[in-house]
Length: 173
Image 1: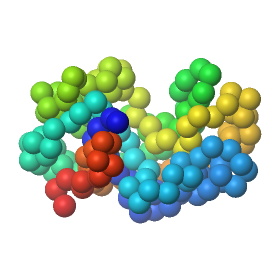
Image 2: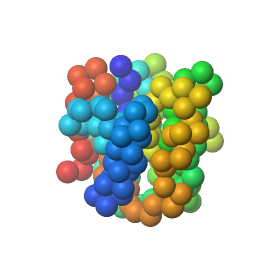
Image 3: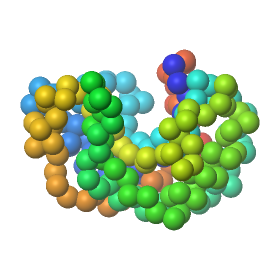
Image 4: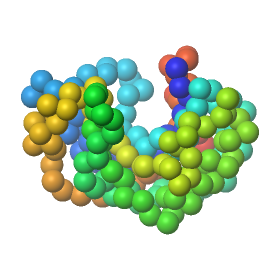
């Protein structure tokens, strides 16, 4: 399983995203709400690899000091072809892109075998996932239940997700 570093949203934004998860689930569509793990929460992945060594944690102290960052969740965005991922685009800001660049530079030597290409600066699309494995034929129905409003909040914590152990660690806590 993949390892990642993820920005977590504030409580109000978390609740708003979970309402969208619930709306998708209530209509019988795929939804992140169906994942019952206590570590499942709305987040923005900033670094991902097959493995991220825990020895990177103390090196991220300075970048954690840059939090919180404003977070604007905008229009829905779709990834994939046959099986889709539906997400909310996180509008990139200069501070968010700078944070991502800094985290990427710090993490690179600790990622095995290296960062996934889609997570690299210049290739990264910040987003909060709403559902995975959505059939293309279900996309119109899924879009119909997503609120057409921008959600404004903050990214206030950084966590490291160990997908092998299925454990998350809030950094700087």
